Length: 279
Image (tube, rainbow, N blue to C red; front, top):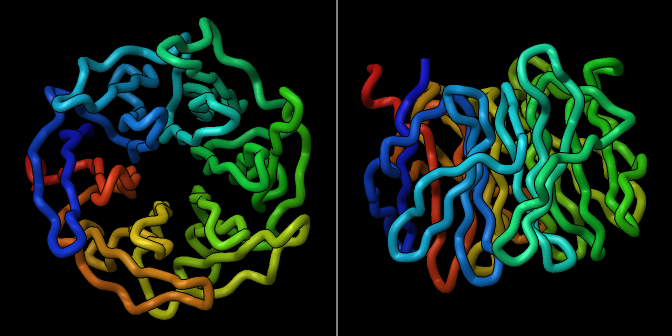
């Protein structure tokens, strides 16, 4: 069942819900990124097309990204003056793909990220001028890393955790941060960091949280992690200054999945799947 795609803005003090984005509906977490001082959103529509929109005062009409189709959430990140979208395929196609926007033009067709298969959507972020894609590997049941270097995807160092869901990525304080639903019961959200070429041992978030995919974003000098609370619909966040995570606080928003979050100017933007139409 699909739900409405909504958005909200945080001004540093409070969240302001802005309502539904057009008539957009989805069953998966959206992705959000800032490219050339504009906000871009990608999401998997009910027909499994990976669509994109741009915020310029109001949201543009959704349009498909190249020939991209998926059965899970996409990811967005900016690298080398391009906006990249990564996603798994649709239905039984568990290959990973990437496609890039240069200026105002998307590539006409997606490219395979070879070497890994995943039934879940990936995490995507730029670290040390290279684009990193981390995903759940269906074959090893662990996380796998692909790094885009000199125009080619190559196998990179992989975190040693045992996830039960899709990861989120963000670069913060000279480290690449990865958060993901943990495998151990009672510890349902874990995190680790990449320093240079080595991942640190995974750690637990300071309190039990829902086991859904998280979202990471840097805003106002802090790394923010968004996730669903234990009630399965309250969207909460915790923050890090680089030395662990704060206790959760609720945004006041309700969602059926992780949101897409990105900062623009002095505000933090959030796109989320509002469950209110299906209580």
